[in-house]
Length: 297
Ligand SMILES: Cc1cc2nc3c(=O)[nH]c(=O)nc-3n(C[C@H](O)[C@H](O)[C@H](O)COP(=O)(O)OP(=O)(O)OC[C@H]3O[C@@H](n4cnc5c(N)ncnc54)[C@H](O)[C@@H]3O)c2cc1C
Image (tube, rainbow, N blue to C red; front, side):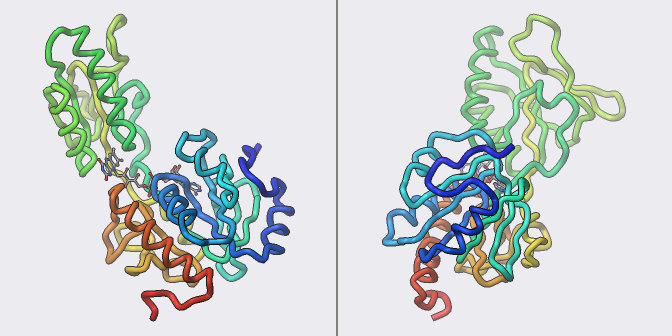
């Protein structure tokens, strides 16, 4: 069952398409609702853009930042509507529930996701897999430190840049991290009465590591599955290939944030998402006004 839209447009699949097609105003559809998409909406709504902006979020929850944008008159946010297919010829995006959205310009901002399936028992330990996890980690460490009355020993699992950041976060909060780059077979529960539900891991060969807390900070990859449906070029290491102007290989489709790769490299930083959104907004504005794009001029 689809979550309702939060601002003015239609809610049935047919009506959504009809209203889109009938609209004289240029329509920008954004697939994804994370920091990159939000920054793009903020930039667009500060410009003289007179069209309609539809944001498709695959999540049912509505973070405060997104709700603030959803009340703007030109913005419609569809919650619980993962974009699942792009018809690049007809300029139409279909969601997993079958809702269709016609676009003049489509921006893919689907971000990144963990590369591997979760380790067994992962829900029992701390995770460092989104930028918000840093604050959650800090709170949990405070609790453990208070109960132990000493610096906690933390088992940190991960190899890439997220693990490097997590290690810095743990050290900054007084944890002694012991890092393993070998993926465990499972996270094991602690004995009853512990502050945290897990403090150890076991490996395939039966060996184990124990500490006061366990943090998983595993590698992430671009969420670029939509690219295949539209025949967009992707980078060998993942990510939708873009040019300096954030255009993909298909006219009318752009990509920003963690889902995009420039020159084969995924951008992967908030600050990069913010500046991508700013440049992309100017490009979209020019494209919507029918002027030549700056990069093409
Ligand atoms: C642990 C961690 C720590 C970080 N720390 C920092 C830091 O200190 N400084 C910094 O600059 N950057 C940091 N980053 C990077 C920063 O968080 C990302 O660069 C930024 O979140 C990218 O934003 P995004 O919108 O492209 O992607 P995401 O944040 O991944 O958001 C994408 C959104 O799109 C949604 N979505 C996915 N697929 C679909 C679909 N098909 N349809 C609709 N919606 C979809 C997702 O649910 C998600 O809400 C960190 C990242 C991680 C993982």
